[in-house]
Image (cartoon, rainbow, N blue to C red; front, side, top):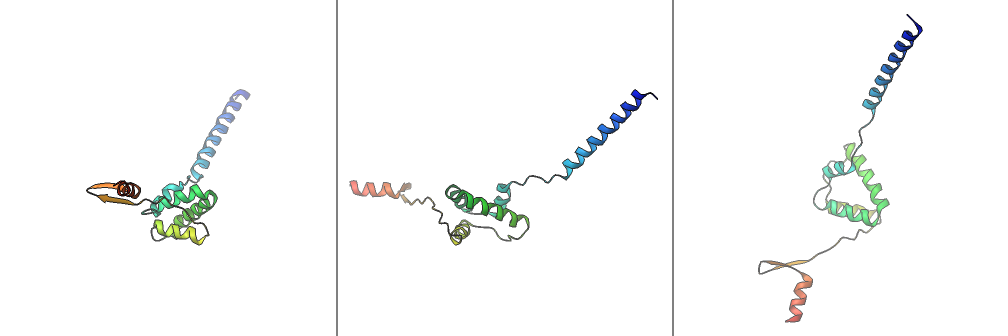
Length: 125
């Protein structure tokens, strides 16, 4: 065999080894965890509303709580679903009062009216 043939064989083997190594490392990479998917399995009722409000008002704290809840959920330490009230209570215990948008609606004669509309109607008549 000539030096050229030996060099070609050596390069082919090197390329094959490199391909195997990249396949192995790709298989060993941990999958990216989407926190939203994990929390979606844990949150019920108005929990997302409370969490999004907390995220808008206290982004660093909400991110910390998110990481912690995802970790606990993945470890199987959260056995029950988390409601909006429970999440709100958690933020309160941490010392952060999450302000939620509050609406009062009234149903009158089959129509839904806001409290503001109802008061205006009563004042104008």
